Length: 148
View 1 (spheres, helix red, strand yellow):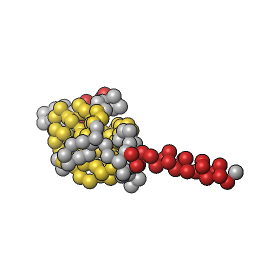
View 2: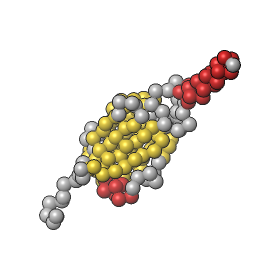
View 3: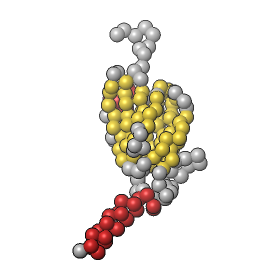
View 4: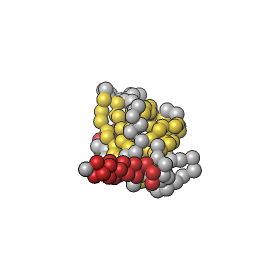
């Protein structure tokens, strides 16, 4: 009986540790988008632990590139394009979002890239569990002369 328990424990250990050793099948699990206090919040949920390193540009731009470090012994050499299938269309339109992509094989990467149709303002936050990255898009001020 104790051999059976040992075999099960070892098998479960390999099952859960394998993605950390070989590299994950995918990096981004999904993207959750919602409104909060007139701001649009997009939470990128990762399939593996990641550590935020930096991003460019700092506060606004027509794109946003977030450099990550995967907490994995394996490497990722592919690209994942999420498109906008996971983002509510009205929220994507509100911030001008065109695409979200993971690029694991680029120089200076891996990167998560957000592409916009116009300059967008943003603020980044990473959760303490290293499983998600939150991008907050503050409410845009009305254009001069626009009626409220």
